[in-house]
Every structure is written in C-alpha cells, then in structure tokens.
Image (cartoon, rainbow, N blue to C red; front, side, top):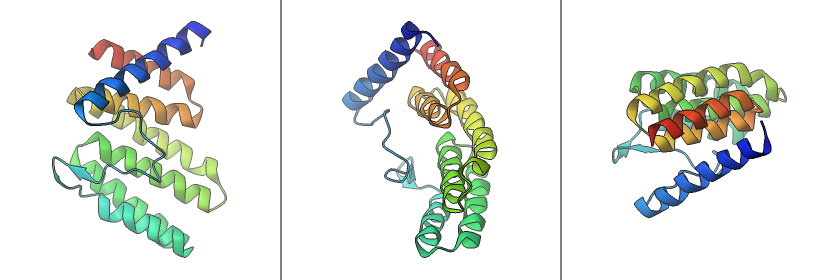
Amino acid sequence: MTRTGWALVTATVVCVGLLSGVLGTSAVAPPRSVQSTATVAGSAAPWTPHITAVDAALRAGDLAAASAASTEAYRAALASRRWEGLVDAADAYLRVARAAGTPRAGVPHARQLYLAALFRARDAGSIEGVVRVAQAFDSLGDREAAEQAIRTAQRMR
C-alpha cells in the first residue's frame, strides 16, 4: 500500500474512533486480551462464558481445555449471528495457538472468522465492527484484507 493509502487508513480509523468516542464507544479497540465484547444489547453475550473459560484454561496451562472452550466459543458466536462473537472467537483461537507455541497455526481459522465477522458487521451497518475487523486483519499481516475492510467502512459512511 502506498504512503497515501496508509494515511487514509489511519485517518479513517482515527475519525471513526473520535466519532465513536463522542457516542460513548470506542472503535479503536485495545488488545483483545484486555477488552472483550462481553455484552450484546445490554445482556451477556452467549459466547462470553466460553471466552472466559479459554482464558482461565490458558492461565492454568490447560491447552486441551482452552482449545475445547475456543471451539465452544466459535459455535456460540456462529449461532448468535453477531460479528462481535466471531471476532472474540478468532482472537481466542489465536491466543490458544500462541500458548501452544504455534502462533501461526491459529491464523487460517482466525482469518476465516474475521472474514465472516466483516460480512456480518457490514450487513449490520456497523462501521465500528468493520474497522475492528480491519485492525484484526492488519494484526495478522493481511494488508490486502485490511485495506478491503477499510474500503468497506468508507463506503458505509
């Protein structure tokens, strides 16, 4: 991507972040280990207990339990039809893979979940969600997908 292109991406993310700050939410998300989309419309999200179980199992060093919980988080997120759950599930897959010492092993599945989250966020009209997914793709090093997500967010304005 050109220097101008990255400047546009940065400006878009900053603008969405500022706009979201005015509305009381943050589009520029902190690392997922710090923030989870624990609620949906004021109630506990169905995938949240599974994400909590992933993190507890990782703290305990139980990779088998963490992996099983991440699969359950994925199933709950998929059933919820919400973009937030797919992002949280993808992030959980990546944490489990990192803890297992194979950080790249979680990338293909996480990428699929981020892509599904992108479509759900777009369909829901959530610029915040589309930008969050763009950040996730960028963190994977998938610049092409990140750029596409930013273009999607720009078209949604």
